[in-house]
Length: 193
Image 1 (spheres, rainbow, N blue to C red):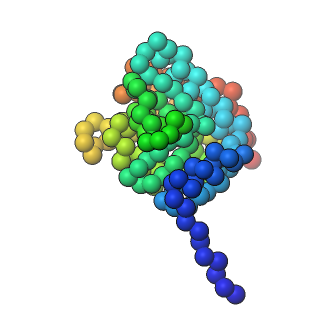
Image 2: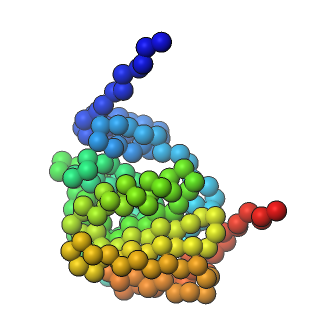
């Protein structure tokens, strides 16, 4: 049996295919990976956070994006779709594109079983190469648990953890805070037997 040779694509080839596709794909240094659909909990959490951010930051110099907004990470050659992003000030776009952002200030990912380790490790490492990036939230969809990373200095990050629904999560790069009750509003956890 002969092994199939893996096909690698240029970023330009990926973007051409992606714009014409009915499905979203990530691009990771030459590979195109189909993104799976989200669960109701995943979507509810992303909506709760993005909605609260958008309402709180109205008429301020911030833009909130959710799920379908593509991000380009040039140093790692990655195109991805974060669950929630906030951009401060003017949008910076990938050269030659009007649909791909390059300057997020804050990113939040809702963790799923299939993406948990990637979001916590390789994706966070890639995000840290973005000069504007200052804050990262990892939100569990299976239980009340949020990991919060905030940049304090060049190459220095503070880690905070939240596990009680009454706790308030304050962001450090944006004038915003939210209770875990509000993040998890209408989220239904499976009962453990």
